[in-house]
Every structure is written in C-alpha cells, then in structure tokens.
Amino acid sequence: MLTIWTNASLPEQEIAQLRQGVGKHRLIFASNLNSLNLSIGEVDPSLAEADIAFGQPLPEQVWSVSKLRWVHLTTAGYTSYDRKDFRTEMNARGASVTTSSGVYDEPCAQHLLAMMMAFARQLPQSLDTQRTDRGWPAAQRRSQSFLLEGQTAVLVGFGEIAKRLCELLAPLHMKLVGVRRAPQGDEPITMLRQARIVEAIAKADHVINMLPSNDSTERLFRHELFQAMKPGSYFYNIGRGATVDQAALLQALQSHHIAGAYLDVMTPEPLPFDSPLWIEPNCYITPHSAGGFRQEMSRLVEHFLTNLRRFEANETLLNRVI
Image (cartoon, rainbow, N blue to C red):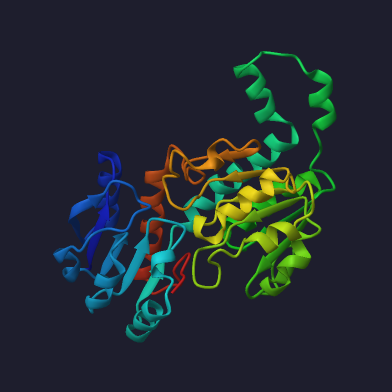
C-alpha cells in the first residue's frame, strides 16, 4: 500500500473519482489546498508520510522528504522544479517528476488555432466595430482578411502542445517549422536548433512561443528577436510570461513592426491594471486560460490515475520530465 498526498483543490465529484481510483492505497490531503492548480503550495507536514505527491508540493520541501518516490504535477509547466539542484537531488534518489501536459495539449492547441483564425478572419476588429460604432466596413474587412494556407508558422518549443497544434494546422496546408534546444530527429516537421531561432523567425508569418521558463529561456524574446521577425507577422505566447521582454514586445507593436500579438501568459500575473499592453491595439490577452475546459479537473484526476497504474506496474510514466 502506498501513501498518496495531494494539495489539489478538487470538486466533490473529482474527489470521489480520486478516492475510488487509488483503490487500496492511502490518500491524504494537505491542510491547505491550492485554490488554483497553477500555484505552488505551502509547507505541509503530512507530505513526510507520502510515497507519491499529486498536485503542487513546495520544491524545497520535496528535497527533505526522502520517502517520496514520485511527484505528479497538476500543470503542464514545471518552472519551479526545472532547476539543476532539484533535478540532481531527484535523480540521486531515483525519484520521478511527471506533469499533466497530456491534459493540456488539446485545449492549448485549440486556443492557439482559434487566435490564429481570429487574426486571419479579422474577428477582433469586427467585434470592436460591433461594440462601438456598429459600422459596416465590409470592403476594409474583406481586403484585410487573409488565408493561413501557404503561410509559415514557427513553433518555438516542441512539446505535447506543439505536436497537437501541428495536427490541427495540417489541413490548412501551412509551412511549419519547429525550434527546440535539442531536436530529436523524429519530429513531424522541419526542426531547427534554438541557436538558429533568428533564421527561423525571419521567414515566419506566425511565431508561436511555447517555451517553459528557465535560465536558458528567460527573456529570450527580447528587442533583437522582435526586430528579426518578419514585418507584419504575428506573435503568440502560451509558454511562460518570463520568456518575453514585454517592453520590447510593446515597442514592436507600437512601431507596427509586427501586426499583432496574442498573450495568454504574462509577467506578473495577473497583469497590472495600468499595463499599456491592455490598451495596445492588436494586442489580445486571455488570463492564463488557454488550458482550461469544463472537464479539466476530471481529466487531471484521470491522467494521474493512468500514471498510477503505470507506477504500480513499474512501467514508463507519461509526461515524465525528471
């Protein structure tokens, strides 16, 4: 029998789903549950009893719990755990860390597709017209609309979300290019190393940032990269806010070097009320909601239970990052 600790705040139906799914194993709850699964939890004494953690345990406490053999995060990202010292400690004890990227690939990919289509078909502009003067600029909208067919999209960061986005974009007959730190050779599209990112984005109509936040990606998208982008191109970010120099992005928008930006992640979050990005024309913001969907909590539990079965059988864990 294993002891499974969680600090995930789940609805009653999903708690019942989790209790039933863990079966014979002991399930314990942290004294303070996370109201939002994107935030790291607090120190919790009961974590010391656990073999498995499901949720967002405090990384520094994980180090001190020698009994802990596996941490399953309720997020696709793992910024707080993506540190050399944390990796070294977990690898030394033979412990694993997995994410829930298998839950979030579909909603995030659909979210990106929706925004790309919105830009192409001038939907935000038509919404602005509806909410203001209720004009009828048919000729202008038709002339400014475009097709994604034949355009180039560069996907910076190539994990589960990027793979699913490639599938969704395939029927649109776009040219897709991926950028990642270490191409594996089995990717479904042309891949370039991150060192060639300037070369890649210079030819792109759409630059899609899906990078995690770590020492190598912090403020990667800075003034030089935005200036290297093709004039009139579009920028999207569903990676992490820290990977973008927001002042440089604002300048690229204000100078009209790039045609628009869609941002689901910011620094800080929530984005302050007085941030100029809120009112910048052709900058569209969603509140870190790209991964959200009605069945999110149930799918998180289901994904964890699938991995639990694999853990019990000593099989390869899904979405393992450490």
